[in-house]
View 1 (spheres, rainbow, N blue to C red):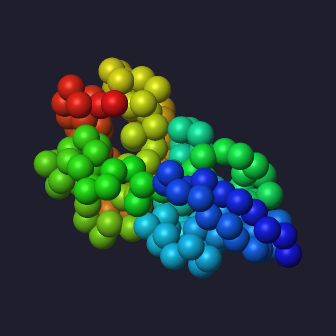
View 2 (view 1 turned 180 degrees about the vertical axis):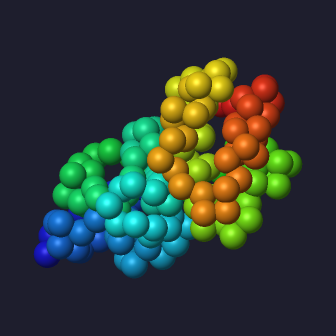
Length: 155
């Protein structure tokens, strides 16, 4: 066991865990930040996507020991009131069905728009590729990302 000081959603947290513990399980089991979901466990589905220093990252395969001083943002930290432009567009386009993949989809889309505020269809498809939606709402996801990009409220 080792102690790690982590900055998550703008707050400092100290956890004592095995160094090999994936950050996903630190978030869910030790800090009760359960918005980030476990999907496949091999970083292939996208359900566990968080931001590490602003980059979309699959949290199920990143050990807590690799985080260092990086800042982590989870779906809970994307916006205080759930009013991030991507979250608002998700609702406008009725994207959620079962909802399981949504946090990972939203975090990936938000990171895309932070780095590329005006993505092309190809940019969206390339970035979102690998984020699996069991309900098949891919066309609505793409439309929601376009709406968020055109909202004029991205920071």
